[in-house]
Image (tube, rainbow, N blue to C red; front, top):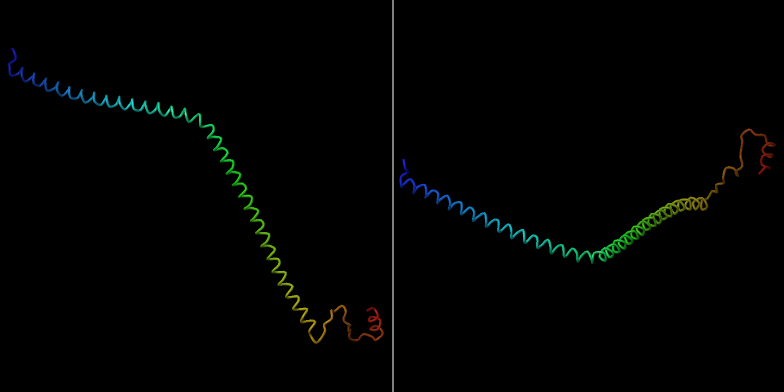
Length: 152
């Protein structure tokens, strides 16, 4: 049985709708592809420009490298000098502090000794050391005491 005219037109209309949808999708895809192509072209241009800049900076780079090396050396030298001075100052500070402590305790000790000798000299009774005092031994014969006293 041959198809009816209405069935043919329906199928033709559905085919045309499908073709339109496909055409729309294809145009969208082509637009996106063209955007991707322009983006790739832009990227290649920027890469070329950066390569050119890099080539020009490579010529300048050795001199910059020398300058930065010299700056690093000078900063290292300055830091080493600062550390050396700082350690010398710390040693000097410690030495001076030790000397001040010694001087204080020596002064304190000498003041105590001076006050003891001052009291001893200004006292009413003179105190002699034991080795120079006359020794009295009870129940010692007089002759023995005279012999012992002659030794001094």
